[in-house]
Length: 186
Image (cartoon, rainbow, N blue to C red; front, side, top):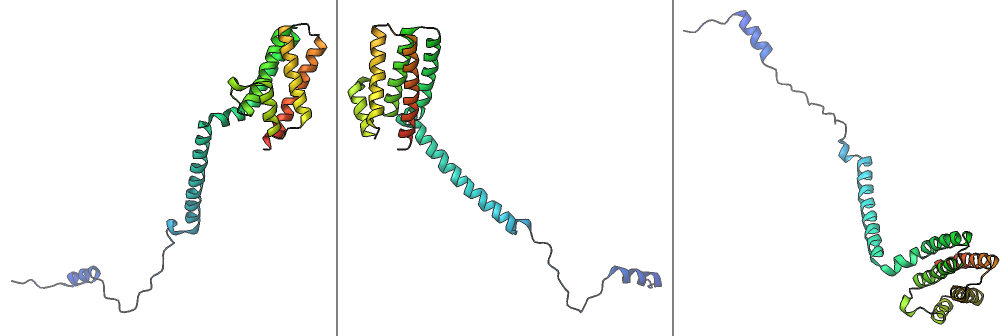
């Protein structure tokens, strides 16, 4: 037994079913996805390039820090400046022997580290020869020789005056600065 369809039932069905559209639909593109934008691509490539550059620089830095001769050469001036500060304190306290010992250590340490001369083979002639090979003029080499000879003489026969000590300090300071400028360019 089939029940008859009422008017309300038909209206309900009419709202429930959508009619087939015969016209062509018009699709509108949505906003482009942010990954495919040019700005995103630019920053992505920039990040990759920076990563490659920094990894190359870090690898180069690690290799250089493993090279003992490079580190000594690079830090020679700083070590010499520290020794000169100690020598200046000894000068102010009128401690002649310690003053000349610090000046001697500063100049020898600087030349040894800067020119990669082992301390076992470091002597005045060898150091002067290496300085000549590096293109240092003879006036600077003569100043170096006189400072070393003065320090060695004063360490073992202390009779230096305060003015002589000040002169040796100033000569040593200016010589190290001049050598640093000349050797840094090479």
